[in-house]
Length: 51
Figure 1 (cartoon, rainbow, N blue to C red):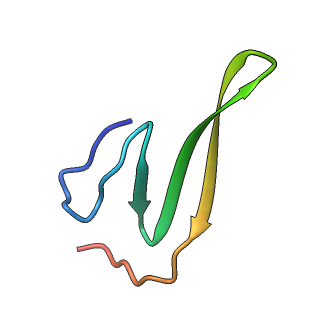
Figure 2: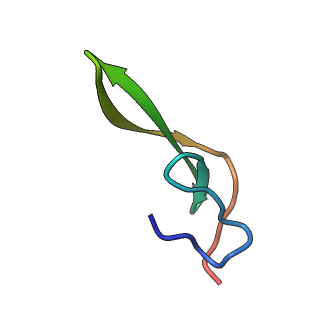
Figure 3: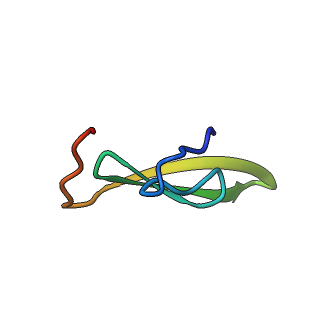
């Protein structure tokens, strides 16, 4: 994932990130000994308008 230069956006593959009012939660789960990436989305009631 590409990191944004915007100080309001931070996060990464193993962290948290905010994108246009949405919080992107990426976490790692294990299933039957195999590593599986799961991406969860949750809405944040925050006003984010493009510059």
